[in-house]
Image (cartoon, rainbow, N blue to C red):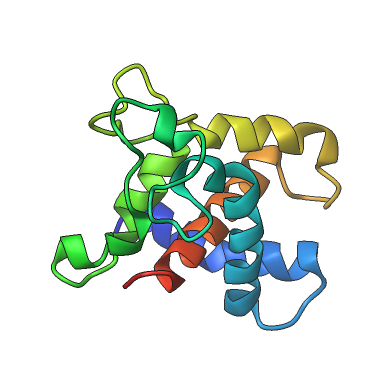
Length: 142
């Protein structure tokens, strides 16, 4: 895991605790991540993450089953690879001209008018959203 991802993982607890009102950060990360998943991902990947969302069924190549990421990686959840796929840092095979939006810039743009926490940039807020989503995906592994 790169140092930048480790730093982001540590800061997401701070971001989530401050933006969501305190408490246990990792539990909140997964809860917030589920909200992000349901509003941004479920339409393609399905509410349970199995790849059967209503829009995903329209694609020639169905969206990936996100509940088997760890199983498909020798039982280890590929946190950094998942983060990079969502943020757009890693090109996803099969997306071609990308049916999946690159969420990093989208989340950053959405945060621009909402950067309500002093000292946090829209990019930091987007990183927190992505990490929360990654933490949630980790909780739905088979």
